[in-house]
Amino acid sequence: MIFPRYRADGHPFVEMNASQQLARQTYLDKVARGEYRLKPLACLCGATTRQAIQIARKERHGLPQDTWMCRQCSLIYLSPYLDQQSLTRFYQEDYRNIYDGAHQPAGLLFQKQRIAGDQIISALRAEPLKNLRVFEIGCGAGGILSQFKSTGCDVSGCDLDQRYVRYGQDQGLTLHLGSFLDLPLKGSYDLILLCEVLEHMPEPALVLRKALNLLSPQGSLYIEVPLCTPHHELAAQLQNAHVWYFDEPTLKAYLETQGLEIDRSVFFTGYFGNFVKRRPSSSLKMRDASIYGPKIRSYYFHELIGMIRRPLSKALRWIGADYFPRLCYREIRRLCYAATKRFQENS
Ligand SMILES: [Zn+2]
View 1 (cartoon, rainbow, N blue to C red):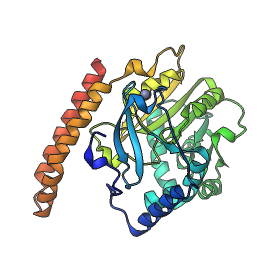
View 2 (view 1 turned 180 degrees about the vertical axis):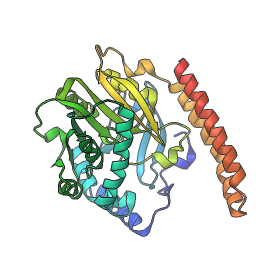
View 3 (view 1 turned 180 degrees about the horizontal axis):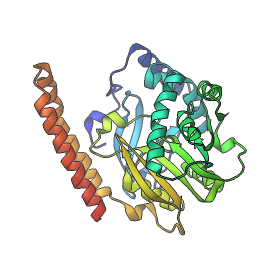
């Protein structure tokens, strides 16, 4: 393991209230009793953890979770991970309680999703949107779809959460309860949305293959994932619900192995969305696009900076003089980000 503070000592990186701590203990008890089972997971490029460097042994809530960076393709991922049966139960019983302390009200989620829907529509820049057939995988309460519907699109979606699906149905949306892989869907869609879902799926290839089969010849996928780079603190990002930690090169390379290519990307705070189309051939391998060397060095560099920054900002916060250093740090981070981006574009 490369960073000592990521050892499996049970201490969380984020503040957790009493109900979150209780939910965390419930999860740990289920693992100890064997109700939740873990199985080894290989990287999306096919390499095993033998060809990876271990970067953490816990995630941000202090839950034990082995995290690796693949030496072949530079993707960060979790292994071992919950098997499918355990994962379904985890999302139904523990996920929201650990992450939010309670179940997020469907109405609140719906409003947040409407804002996200407007962002996607303005990024799409397709005129007219009217009559497009749109499907969303993991649609939550359906707020994104409702914005597409208001522009005249024919929309539908699916989600595993019963409360959210029911709320969306009450808003007049066609939402299905259940897994996308199990739904008997027919016909061709012009746009299939995967907003913050790909990173949760241990087997994203199955989902992408089915989505591609449902896509019209000129149709596209919209894939939005959290952007995991050394400029965003790893400790705050690692979570046992995210299996894959994509950045621009790894997502691009993975999609190419699946016969897809990114047509255009849009960046939101901490996230990036991609309009993705079919690719004529899919001969590229993930490791061909690897940036392992510069990426791991960049993580080391940011971790070293953090060893100075964290105690310093704590002390400055304590005396109430942390405004100027925060400004400087933001500027340094911005410059580092621009430099790495230029490096990636040139390599
Ligand atoms: Zn890999």
